[in-house]
Image 1 (cartoon, rainbow over the protein chains, first blue to last red):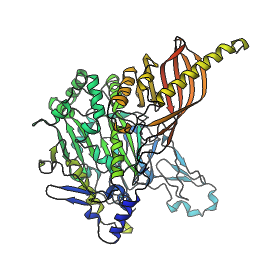
Image 2: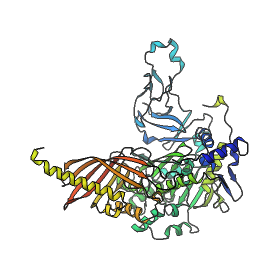
Image 3: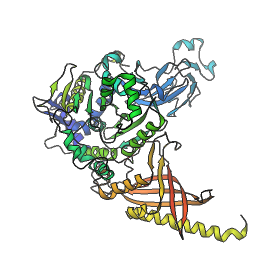
Image 4: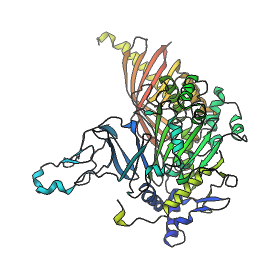
Amino acid sequence: MPPNPKAGEMALSDEMAEGFLEISDLVRDEVRRFRLHCSLYVDQHIFDLELERIFERSWIFVAHDQMIPDPGNYLTTNLGKQPVIVSRDENGKVHVLFNRCAHRGSVVCREERGHANVFRCPYHGWVFGNDGHLIGASQRNGYPDDFLDWDLKLEPVPLVESYRGLIFANLDPNAPSLSERLSTVRRYIDLWCERSPVGRLSFSEGIHRYEFPANWKLQAENGVDGYHGNYVHESFVNILERSGERKLGVTTKTRNTVGSRNFAKGLPMGDGLLEREDGMLGTFDYRGHDDYCKKVEGAYGQERADDIMMQRNIFIFPNLFLFESHIRLIHPVRVDKSYIDVYPTYLEGAGDQLNLERLSEHERFFGPSGFGAPDDIEIFVCAQSGAAATKNPWLEFSRGMHREIRNEFGETIGHSTDETPQRSLYREWLQKMTTAQLPRGQRT
Amino acid sequence: MKPKEFPSELIALLSVQAFLYQEARLLDDGELEEWLGLFTEDGQYVLPIKDGAPNEPAIVRDSRPRIEERVFRLTHTMAHSQRPRSRTQHELTNIELLGWNDNNELAVACNQTVHELRPGNPFQAGLAQPRSIHGRCCYRLVQDGESWKIREKNCVLLNREYPIYNLTFIF
């Protein structure tokens, strides 16, 4: 843990209290230059506001259908700082319920995953169905006859919708629908799912998880950063050179070739992606797996298959990534502490052998002992410590701003090493953070 | 166990204990090439998450070539997560010989705690903070002259399925 990030915090909060700095001053979006104030990583007040204005108002990924495939399956997670249960009832319907007893507020489920028809509060034994309804209170005669009309239950999260098995929830009852929210990133989600020749993914029980003493946004920026690979992952590049999988110097060269289909894209609503035809560090190499490639071509056609086989890291604002080998979810814990959950995907219809090799390649790079991802995390931690320095507090996110273009889908397209996706992320961040709080009555 | 068997059992236990202490010392001294030499040519180093099934992800699932890759990474590359390099102290307790299997492998179990600290500026996040990581370790050892070689080192960490910060040193 950082011994004392407070110096930077105090300075900014004081400035804000004095009216010198507003949230809207913290992102400087100019003609060829884009800058962020470093307080975005260290200021407690900003972090608290992020939970309220971003995590309690956005569509947040809670689970994939196949993580709770059968009636009675459940998992528990947090939406921002609020504890929820994601459960599948006896009819197969998915519910996202606040994990809080209607009586005196204890959580009713302490497991992370499991199977249950009912949730029983440990405090006074009230029992709720896995759809949230109150089955019974113990020693019922202590309550009047109209007790059941009080509508006590495990409260449902206002909005729950899913797309291609990805289940999202939203604490804001007035939010636009999920399909509206995903309208511009949907085509990439489809391509990601179609890595499976039958369009279906499944998941292991175990997952990789990281904890790190730095702000959650450092991971959000990094997952679509095509600039850091040769520097942060020098070690992994050396490993590939040692094994003969990559020749010296090739990494830099191919990525800078004019006319290649290697892009960094900024999408509307804060999303973004990194897209490369020549592979991404730490991803499985499908070349030579002819049976699999033929299956994908057979299922979707040659042209579509080419698009499917592009390597993409897809960021869905504010905290979800769809990587080639896994789903990655960022959990903000404190201003300077975050968790990451990494769910490796299994491509249905691609065969066990290919999936095992794919998993092995995933394990080589990712996880807390992998040869790549821990080096990224080390850099987040370095950035967290550096952000406490306040003289010229601006961080440069300007790379490639002078050369990016817009396409017919409303996407901003940059060179694959440009900071185009990060600019998209922070424009949405600013938009959400500066939208005034909803009146009390409308809040959940 | 019959009384007359005591001496040989005890000698085996002492010999295994000395071998495991040697392994711990090599890791703590950063003698990773020598540590690698303790493994058989088909040796494995595994930190599982669930039950070790092949389709379940593991924190580490190193076959011999990947152990070599891991040692190469730690000794010959700029691995940022190991700059500064972790200091470690391995502690071994509850060492038990579980018995020989049909492949002439001796199964050994022990508990290990690795105390870790990365030296550096204590004002910076992640540095100069001692941590302890605990695991239940099972070894399959084969006899090699008067000593042993490791065919498998399998460590089930106490916090295996929970968020873990920087586990890039060797447990």
